[in-house]
Image: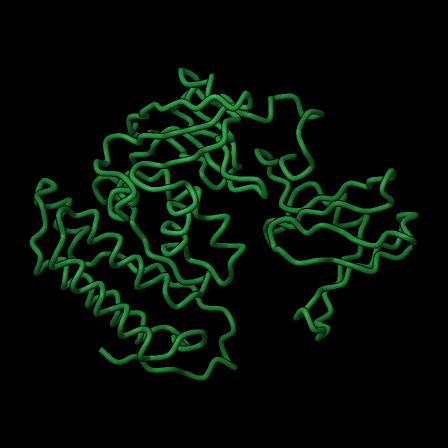
Length: 336
């Protein structure tokens, strides 16, 4: 199947949620009977056709040949499947391959998508760590993860990143931890042998290694995967590695469970401003918006485009850097 481009000048941002046309309908209408290989291939064809027809420029970041190779790989994966999990992953990989963070695959309602492994992981500079976990496994919170299922922790995150709906590496890094703990996706990626359990090998702060197995849980209510790196599903009692008191949290974890889409904090000790701009959505608390006049100017530099921040009221004339957490860009030149 050949892809085709379109003029992107009239539509800069495109969002499409491509659903499994026959998969979702059959899964619901036929008492969740297993789908045939042909039905999965029809779903793949529906998704790829929808993307090609509706996306303003599907070849913005990849070539037609690259897209077609990914589709061919998906066809073969579906033909060779051991379970439905491989089919879900194959189709999701096609959607993710165009590297457009505003193009995603709707999976709501499909059997198995509401089952998670009750653990939160995050990749820091010194390794992958357990940032939150079901309370019965509290002894492992804060441990460094060595192995996830059948592969190393690093390899598991690399595999998961292939399914991220992301424009850049930072977005893939942020999404990988949420993909790894989805049991259906972990099974389809070959990270685990069974979608029912997640074997982990960890290393405690003492250096002592331990192995344990987390059973998958069926989530009711919000799964909270997008809320914060240490927050568990509403239906699962959770413990966090960062504690529960606000003053104990590092800056990047503050306000994770609030409706503050953007906020800042003046770090007087370092003569800098820490700022998070998580969503371009108005919020009831407009204090931060009134206090800071934030303007983005596209300035071409060797490192790429860098936005600049102008702070009118803060005595931070000699501040040299502001951390912009979610957008993965450096904000510089803070002036009074």
